[in-house]
Image (cartoon, rainbow, N blue to C red):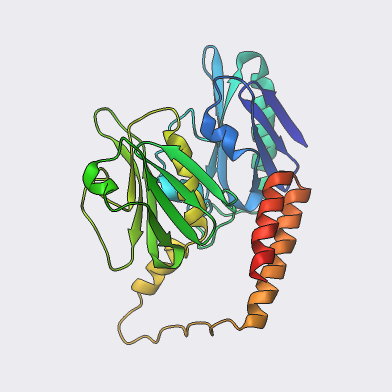
Length: 295
């Protein structure tokens, strides 16, 4: 086992997965603190590196494209303070960081983990339900519906329509952009058969972000939604089928019995996430109650 403990956080590698725990230092971003501990399976890694600096260095993980809904939803736009796959390392721990890198790289070689993209999520994304207030509104997600509520800073034309509820099944995409310079950021949901080119300020399916401290938390909502949408790689493969080639038949509509079995599997998954510490007691209880209501 390899472990490195810093003010910025603690990384532990047990040979099968990496546990990334954010530090409690005041400089650790709200996003990383709210994401909590992330468990990254070895199979989701494309590489690891360590860069030395005069005062501090930086450990970086490179995940396989398509493996993490957070990286997909944010398009690689998470800045250095908010990226959970980077760890600031103090100069007196450079030797430990280099040992950590060697251990992970050796495991990747021994397990012959490829670095190519994947067509399924290998990380689960943030747990639900969750709710974030930032910019001109509040975005809440319970696993099936997104609710957008507006505040006093919302443009009148957008607020006039009132709160908005979007079904997950009606969405084809979600994206999070940070505010950059004079350009505002946004959390935007793309609704099937209802594309819009309106700026986020006027788009009823978007929350406008101005670059304040809580803005990055909206990336959690984006990641939670992305994790429950069809994987983009599979959608792209479907669109690129040659003409005349038969499509793969769609799976049959699940019966009530199938739904019940799926919910039981989800309960077992939640129990494992709780047992390993990924979910807190409160998160586990809320998620379990939501599933039991559907059974």
